Amino acid sequence: MRSMYIIQRCEYKGKDKTVGTSIVSDFYPQDYMGSAEFEFGAKPSSLRKMYEEAKSYDIFKIFLLGQTVWVWGNPTNAEDITKQLGDYITDKKRLKEYISLPEILKGEKKSYQRDDFWWDLENHFVFSLDEKAVRDFQLCLVNSIIHMDKK
Image (tube, rainbow, N blue to C red; front, side, top):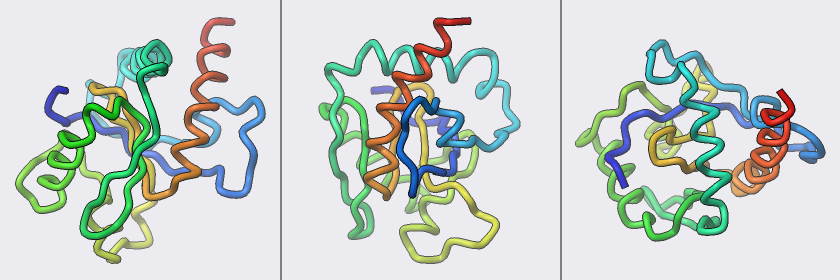
């Protein structure tokens, strides 16, 4: 696994909904991150990579500051994900752009911090404190691939 650096901030909007035919952008509005790395096809490329690798993916838990963080990705990366996110929340690691995970885990989230779901665009996995958000992503991913292939 590469060093985590390019993490897309998202806000999960599916709490009281069923996925149906929704695509990723319907359930996970994404913040404008202001960097070229988040543009130029990085998101569709990551979606396709996750779709291709889905058979080796699973939903698993990691623990940060005593709280459960749900991950959908390759479970062989669980230890590395835990270490890198742990380093981020203790200011030992920097990401390209800020995410609100440390404040959420510490119970210090501000009203303007809407992100509650994150997507690693280089290592192709997602994570959240909300298990349903992670489960719904898998279904939205399939719908997104179908949608992209129709274009």
